[in-house]
Image (cartoon, rainbow, N blue to C red; front, side):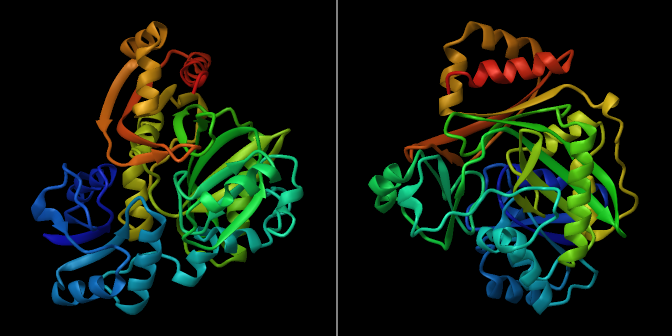
Length: 380
């Protein structure tokens, strides 16, 4: 059986195993630490950012036909670099590393001139930050999932706490945008969007990481059209290859602010949430966008999208659930699936909240799912 190497070893990366098996590929996972659910025999203990070691491994093991990124931006950059330096037997559809850095590295992405119908948070100079009287955000370059991000209430707060923050990367400072969060996944082929998915996203009060998502999305058709136009314009202007594209945005006063874009698998079993909502495999579409195995199916009819909620349970959220009989009853009544997680989330005061599992709930209508998410996060 032909082999594929996935750069990533999270629990949710392992879901790729069965999808690859279904198309006749044996799947292995590369990373320093092995998730408990990944069999030892399918684990390649190499840091997935160590491209030199991975190239040496692939040269010694020519039976690996494909290489794709798991759920980490650095995995995509590594895969891009490896594929530029070492041709695999079969074609992988990926951007060059230089192009990928344009949307993955936050400082480079914010320096680009983007589609005129969308907005981006205003940049703030480090020299003038002490004069700011509104909230703003510091973001380090190669981070995601709320890590390497700090929110300040104003310039005085920044002056008091900045030296306490561990800065390991280049960083940018930008205005804080308060509004409704949304995730969007597209697959682009020959200048057209052939797969799309939209959600609503929810945060704890620290606003650092997405802890719940729901469908169908509350984005309206005009807003979706703007996002489609942005996607296709970005592909054309910055010469992206066909394939997967994931956007996080905030809607405020009918304006769409692009927060970040990526081309790797979203984490915390987002793919399971999407699959349950759409009724078609998100993971299969993700794989096919890289290796071109057959037709990609999509359900673009919003009337068919189910009322699904995903909650990423960590220590803080679990304590909230335990304290509310109403929330516990909601979960008991509507729970359809749960999957174990690994990893952690960083809170606003640098607390570490251990992730336990992602749970998936199905409701009778969108209002019920939105009400549940708001009640769950009302005190967090």
